[in-house]
Length: 151
Image 1 (cartoon, rainbow, N blue to C red):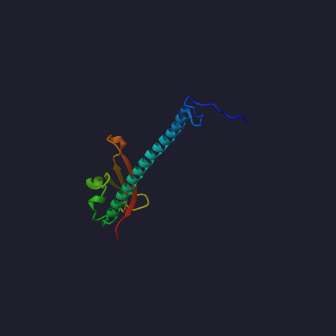
Image 2 (image 1 turned 90 degrees about the horizontal axis):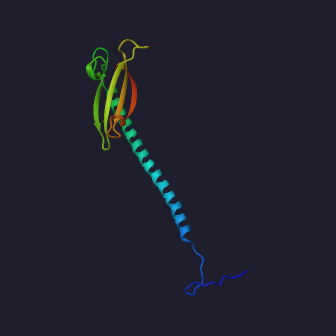
């Protein structure tokens, strides 16, 4: 095998190394990888924020449902919060947590199929919260429960 004994201008031997083009290609590939990781992190943070909001909204809906289930209700002494015929039957409550402001819409309606008249309620609890400035950007969850006369 023949040895390369060429010398540079300074009199030293040429040593192997990376060319500028190889370094630029390596840096470009590295940057594409970093951009992919950054995009993935952004999506993960957005997903975490969305799941936190949904979890809090479900907790707000369950708290409202527990409050409504604790109300004594029968057909003779109707509570206005559970009376679909009363104007207060469909109402919205503002609810603030440390992260968001939630609007809780409570909509009771009588269930007459299979039950006597006005002895069972279907209560629909809708929790809405903003995810942007525009009204169309609101997100919501719906929680339904059934309630019969208190014994």
